[in-house]
Structure formats: C-alpha cells, structure tokens
Length: 458
Image (cartoon, rainbow, N blue to C red; front, side, top):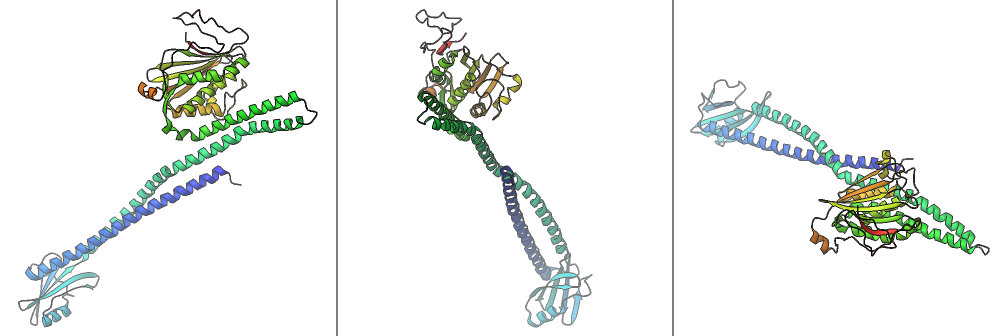
C-alpha cells in the first residue's frame, strides 16, 4: 500500500514535469515560429535581390563584363553572343526564341545539372538579351541558415527545459508547502487529540458505571469534574491546532499589543491555579516601558499562556514563577522564569520540536505547545531562547520588535502600563531604589503563596 507522502510526492513530481514540458513546448514553438519567419524573410529577400540584379544586368550590363555570378547572352538574328566563361549548357534557347517572336519579357527558374538558375529574357533595341544568375551561393547561405536555426532551436529547447524546471519548482512550491502543512496538521490533530479523547472515553465509562442506583454521589461528582477538566484540555489542544494552521494567514491582523497587559490578564486568570498549587506568580518591570509590540493579540496571549503553563508543570509547591518585562531600544523582552526542576542544556533546541518529550515535570516542556510558541514568535519577527540547569529552574526569553509609534498604540487603545500596586492576596518584591510602602504590608504566609500583579524588579 502506497503511503500518502509518497503519493503526494509523485503527484508533485508529475505536476512539475507537466509544467516543465508545457513551458519548454511553448518556448520551443515560439523559437520555431521565429525561425520559420526568418527563413521566409531570407528566401524572399534573396529572390527579390536576384530579380533586381537580373533586371539591371539585362538593361545596362556589358556582355563582356557581366556582374558576379551573372551570365549574359544576346541573340541578333541567328547570331548568339555569350559573356566570357559562360557554361556550355546555357543559355535557355526556348525563352530566347519566344521573346524574339512576341517581344514579351520572361522570368523563370530552372535547373541544369546540379545547379539552379533564375533567368530573365527581354527584347531591347532589336536584340534579345538573356541574363542568368547562379543560385548556388544563395543555396549555401540557406544551408548555413538551416544550421543556425537548428542550433538555436536546440539551445532554446535546453534553455526552455531549464527555465521550465525553475518555474515549475516555484509554481509547485506553495502546493508542496500546503500539502506538508496539511499532513502536519493531521499528524498534530491525531497525536494531540488521542490522549484527551481516550481520557474522556474512560471517564465516560466510569461515569456510566457510577450512574447506577447503588453509585456513590461523591464519586460521581469527582468524575464529572474530571470530565469537565478533560473537555477544557481538549479545547486547548484544538486551539493550538487551529493556531498552527492559521498562523501564516494572520499578518494582516497585526496591531499594537501590550505585553504588560497580557501578563496582567494572565496573573488574574491563573491566580486560582497558583493558589491551589501554592506557587507564587508575579510580574516584574525592569523599566517603565512601554512594552508594546506589533502583532496578533490572541497569538501572543497564547505565547505567554503556554510559557506560564509550561512553568506550572515544572514548579513544585512553594516555588516561584516570574514574568519580567523590559525594553531594549527597538526590542521588547519578556522573560518567564521558574525555580522548578530545570532542564538539560542539551535539550534546549529540542524543546521546540513537535511531540518531543522531556524527562522531568508533569506538564509539557516538550510537545506542540512550545513548538507553536516558536512559530508565533518567528512569525512576529522575534526570537526565543531558553536557559536552565537540572534542579535550577528554567528561563524562556522572548524578544519581539517594539511598536514604533506610541500614537499607534494609543489609537488602538493600548496604554503604557504603570507598575500596579493592586494585589490578589499577593506578595511584593522590594525595590533596590524604593522601599515598600507601609500601607501595603501584605506578604505571603507559607505555605500558601499566591499570584501577584506587578512589582518593580530588583
């Protein structure tokens, strides 16, 4: 059974060959038509030139000194005079007698032996004059023209094949990329949906068993809660897949996006999970910004969410996850750092490979999520780097081009964020340049650290 990639590859090769043949055929046909046109023009020019030369020779040339390649004959009564060196099988006596009889000029072409001639016979001042031109030089010229046209046709065919191959590759490349993206999307879907669908099926079977009359209501509630969680995770996987499929079509949606606002929103959204897992989640500012970039807000929100979700999966209770924002000239930098299990530096590049798996942590350090993060960052003209050591946590650093004009950011409703003092039962980090206000003495009381909004960076 033929695999789909092999079938698609053969289809692409066949399409490339068809396009190449069509281009080569079209170019070859054009060259052939040009060659035929050149040949016809050349023949017509030769014939017109020969007839013109014969008319001049009959009217004016001296029989003793005719033009090159032309022989003259005169018939005076019964006496025939020929120019020096004339072939013995000339002149054309039939035309001489006819013109002598009716005085009407005659022009024709005839062949004697292996040579072709054009002959002109006229009656002038009581004398019949006949001029003949040898066409052997014109024949040689035509033969050289044949060779030149054949060489041009062959060279044109080779050039047409090369050009056709190049054009075919360029024409087929988008189709090949589309097929590759389709295969990857199907692979992503089948791989990513298999696990959550299996979990949902298993929980549905358990739920079916516990719906019996003798089932424990508390266990039933637990299974329903797990099923709800599973459907949410399934929706997240589908969001990832759709983002992967549509990522290259979203450039027209680019606009100002405030990374600080995205980080603040994520703090609020993840506060419950941070409290449940006893993890401190906070935002720090190395400067006052603005931390506004140009991009697609849902895609960049997914970047921040995936990096924080990855950090949650590798941070133990009592740990810290910090999002740090800074601006360096024309770039805005977002760093997501955790103090969890860390990573092997040799896996730094493999982290962003689709479906690769890490050896530590409960979340997806490897897989589709981080692969999509790189795709989104690359699509926004940015870079992403990772640093970490086993047992020493990990830091993901995203650098994106800053929005050039502040007016564009304001027109889009994006404001440069100021450090917030509002907390959700939060912590504060002391600033090296500013003492913590006495009016906000709230600090985390172990073992329940929770999410913080923003604090100035040390």
